[in-house]
Length: 167
Image 1 (cartoon, rainbow, N blue to C red):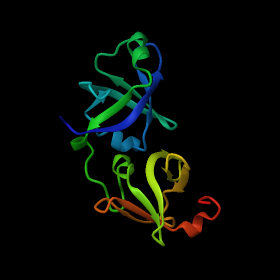
Image 2: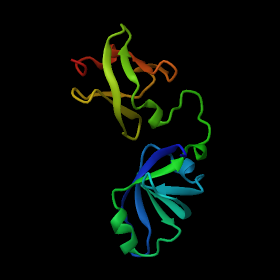
Image 3: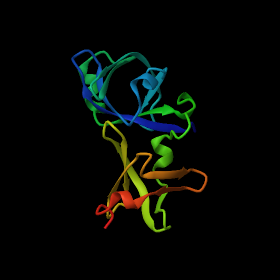
Image 4: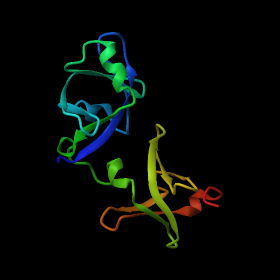
């Protein structure tokens, strides 16, 4: 089975002719435009992208085979995937969300805060949601995140900068 990566969710139809509005998961529009095809749902088949445009924090796309609103309505809320080999290489200190989710988070003294359970963008930086119960919100900035080690499966943060948030 091909390794699939979640990149967006279908927000709903856009217009009457089969276009759809996507909410991206941290992907830049420039990177999104490099994809030749998308996969709707984990069991879906690759569908060719005919056009794409950016609208604020969303993308409007037209996929092959979608010609009317009635074809988009049933897939509203569905997850969009790409094959991992379409993603390309990242720069230094860049990570895909799927690689960050599940990492254990420690402060500089070694205290475990939990694991990353979700990530959301804020415009200026991503925010890591740590621990399902306590839901610490950790800004993904260089001054807070001191190390991300995919090999060790952990993130080290400077908790001193988050005074009051981690109590």
